[in-house]
Length: 78
Image 1 (cartoon, rainbow, N blue to C red):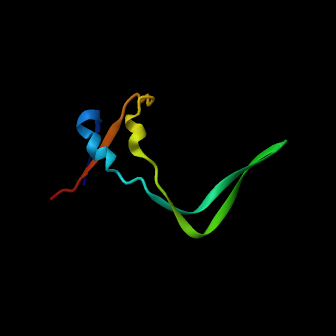
Image 2: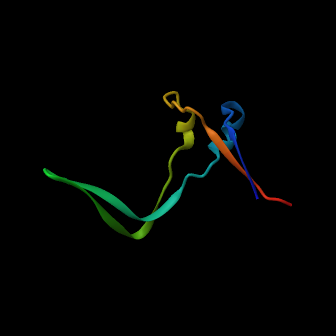
Image 3: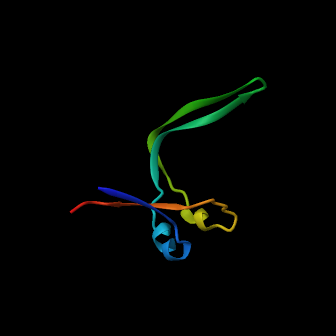
């Protein structure tokens, strides 16, 4: 397998990047619990896993200030 990296061409790559599935599933989250003298992460488990999805649109947002955006391509050898 060959792995290549290149800088994103925002115009040419926009459709492909927008199609990336950012969904993930988890059974655990961590709550931030604070007191006057401490900060603690407390694990909380769900009875059933939950699915979360994040928008990939921020890659192209006006406010996004990336030094460089890189795509990684995997190619299997024939």
